[in-house]
View 1 (cartoon, rainbow, N blue to C red):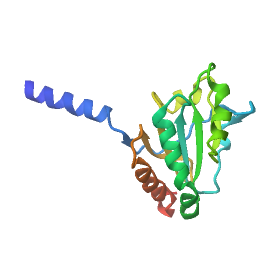
View 2: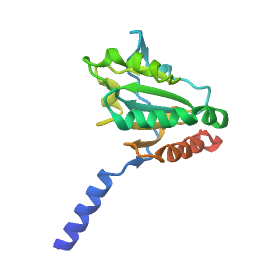
View 3: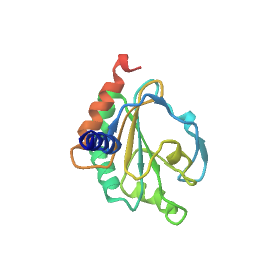
Length: 170
C-alpha cells in the first residue's frame, strides 16, 4: 500500500512540474496597456492566420531577457519561414512598469509589447513566474506552453511554432 501511495504521489508531483503542456484552450479576452498607455484588448491580437507567440516577461528577470534576446537573434528567420508574430507581456508592477518601453527600445526588440498593469492577463493565463511562453494557432487557441528558459529552449519553441503553422493545426 505504501508503495502504491508513493508512486501515486510521485506521478502527481511530476505532472505538476511539467514544463510543456498542450491545452488547446482559447486565448482569454483581457485589457492590457501599450507602453504609451493606450488600452488594448487581447481579442484584437491578430496575425492573419499565422502563429502567435505570447511571452510573459519582466525587466528584472534575467532568464526572460535571455529568452527574448535568443528569439530576437532568429526572429526574422522565423517570420520568413512561418509568419509568426511575437507579443511580449510585461509582468512588471507599478514600481517598474515605466521602464518597460525604454527597456524594449534599448534592445531593439521588434516585438509587440504590452503591460499587464493589474496582472489580469497573467492570472487568466495561469502564469505564476516569468518567463512563460505560449504558442497560439490560427484560431487563437493555446497549443503549447513552456515555463522558464535555458539556452536551446528557443529551438523547442520554434518546433512548436512550425507545428502551429501547419494547416492541420488550424
